[in-house]
Every structure is written in structure tokens, then in C-alpha cells.
Image (cartoon, rainbow, N blue to C red):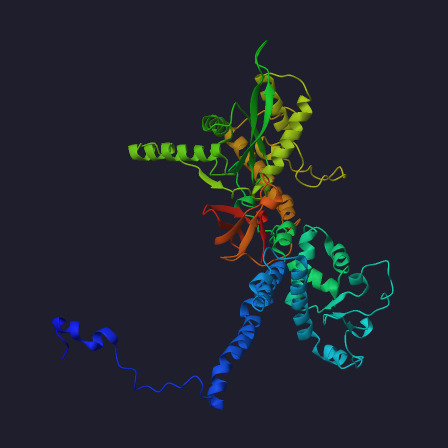
Length: 549
């Protein structure tokens, strides 16, 4: 039973604890047995010995776990200082930052371990005073061991006193070693990633002799992420088949229309008034390559809607419109959709009021997706500047200039111009618009008897002949691929790419990860959805992406 609290005051066990007189304690003067003496002495010696071995064999000192030779050398230098200070008195211990000699000694430890793992037979032969095997890769270098146990080249420059000792007898390194990679990386970074293979090799040759050095340098240059980002090329893919609206015959031009803007053009508004900016809206028929030019006062949504209204009034309502992702185009589409929605809600009996236009947007930053109208924009600007020269013009004169440029572009031949007089004249966009080449007024009708029905049938027959020639002469010319003829691997989800940008230097292009791919009808990926490091998502064509894997 436990003692009551009142009994603890007189308890000897409470105040003095258990009696230890029964335990056997050897007297100080009594000699210990040999086994006991060994047990008492062994821990101090063995602990110090194994502590040193454990430190030298730490997994963290594996060169594969380090990305910098200096960091690895500094870690080993600190360990060596700790080991040295542990054997000294407090007054003799070294403190402060690491010295150059300590870091160089640590580098020698790293290099010595690397050489022992790569050339064990050669080092063993040299330590025994025997020559190395003639079949060794080092036989031509006449290797020798220095006072630090480092394997160096003997070579023919040992008496060249005008060069440094390291250059006369450079340290031998294997090609396939992590230590060699770190040394090559240090020289490559010191040359700011632009030294090239020869310059990096020249810098390394001042101290090291690497077996197959050029291959080792090139191998690291291919692994260097900074170099890969600087030298990465944008992706390409085989040219996609033409969409159906490019080869689908239609009895009217501008059934499928592509639109884009160019400019600005400066016009005078009167004496003493500042010049104003005006822009050109280029409507291109994707089938006939006909062009319609409109003068636009600004790049707002309202300005484009007015321009589109004038185009539809003159050329008819297109079924499809293709454009880039300009803010004025996107705003126009949103407003048109709202208007169409209101009309449908009112259920107006007239179905024409509910006719809408299917709008197709090209991917952002992908002008090559609209090459058919981008080339027309270039031609329209060239024609307009050729007519304008450098004259100061008004808005009316600019509109007249656009009309002249439009006539010039629509008179260009689409097919081959033959030199034989009996051959047909080449097809032009004006054949689909006004039934003739253009540039002259239509001749008067010579028939004495006029029948509207007969005349209508004749006109329809002529239009059919034009479209037949278009199918026979123009469409086959679209078949060959002018570029991008080779099929390449497609991007996949989770691929890491560099996003090219025209607004920032190449070194500042951001990294992104592919989150979603959009394959075309031929199952090749040309547009992907990305996510930047900031979390922002964007859609880009592969022509603006540089792969890193």
C-alpha cells in the first residue's frame, strides 16, 4: 500500500531514495578485465573513426544531386574545415569565410573521386610504378600522378615554361561524368552562353583535358535550358487542306468573305485644321479572290458596322465572314448577335430580318491562318500608295483612290496569261463581278430584238461558263503546297513551350504548359490552349510556340 501523505515526513525512502549499498561498485584501484577495458576504450575511437567515414559517404555529396561545382566544392570545404577544427584546440581553429586554397582542395577531392571511378586501372598501374595498357584511351596522353594524387597529362609540353603548370599538365577528366558536366557548365556560364563549342573548349583547355571534349560540350549545350530557350525554333506542321469554302463554286461573289483593316491614311480637313486618320477595310472573296475596299473613319465597332452595312448593300449578304480577333470585330459580332436576338424575340413575319452572318475568328496572333486576305491587304496598300504618292488629299479623294485601287486589283489575272492570240483571256475577279476584265464600260447590245427572258438565260449561261473555267483553270492551281510540306510530331497536353511574342525580347518570352489541343480535320494540331505561370490562359497557334522537350 502507498503511504499516506502524513507519513511521508518520516519516510526514509521519500527523502533518500532506494538503498544502493547492495550494488557492486569496483574500487578505483582494482584492475579491469581485458574485455571491460576494450569496451570502455572502443566507443571513443570507433565513434570518431566512423563519424569521419559517415561524413565522407553522405548521399548529399553525390555530384548528381548538385547543379553547381562551386556549391559542391563549398560543401566539401566546410566539412573538411569542421573535421580539421575538431582535432585542434579552440585557439587554433580556423574561422571566417572559406579561402581559395580550401575551395581548391575541395575541388581536388571531387576530381580525385571522379578519376578513381573512371580510370581505376590506369591509376592503380601508376601507383605501382607500372605503365598503363596501350589499349587505354589515355595512352596517348602519357598520364602521371601529381603530389595530390590527381591524374594529369604528361604530354610533350611538360618543359614549356612560358605557360602555366595547369596548361602544361592539364587534369584528365572522363567524358561521361557528372563532375565533367559541372565543369563544362561553369565554363559555359562564364562565357554567357554565347561562347560556342570552340571558345568553351579553349577556356577548359587552360586547366583540364576532357576525353572527347567537343562531344561533351555539345552534349551540355543541348541540355542547357538557357541556350535552348535562346535557340529554340517555332513549331511547324504540314500545310492543312483548304477549307470547303475555298473550292466551293457559287453563282455570286463574296459568299464567303474575309475582312481586315489597314492604314492609317492621313487626310486634310480644311485650312488650319489638323489631319485626321482614315483606314481601309479590305473585303476579300475567298473563292474568286475579288476585293472590295471601303473607307472607314475609325477603328470602333460603330465604324465597322457602318462599313459592313455599305458592303452588304453593294455586294449582297455573305453567308460567312472570316476575320482575326480584333476588338472592333469582336464588338461588332456581339452587337449583331444582340440585334438578331431582339428580332427573333419580336417574331417578325419577315424572315429576312432574322438572317444572320456566321462569323469565324482566326486564332489570336495567327496571321498565316488568313493568308488569303493578308496578301490582299498588302496588295491593296501597295496599290493605294502608288496612286496617292505623297499628296495631301481629302476624304472624298481618298475614297476615289480606294475605288481605283479596287478596280486595279479586280483586273489582275488569276490564271496563266498565254501569248497565243487564239487562247482565252485569263480569268480575273472582274469576270465574277461585272462579267468582263474591267477598265472599260460594257459595250452596247447589238441585238435588234430584245427579250428579257432570252437575255437572262444568256447572262446565266455566261456566268456558268466563267465558273466552269474557274473550276478547270484556277482551282487546280491551289493543290500544290508552297511550304510546310513535312509532317512533324504534334504537341500534346502537358508539353512545356516558350510563347513567342513580338512585343518583348526573346530572353523574356514566358514559359507555358499546353492544357488543351485543337486538332484539325486532318488530325494535326495547329492551335493549342496554354496556361502561363501566372495562371492566365490563352490560345495560340503552334507557329508562335517553341518546344523545350
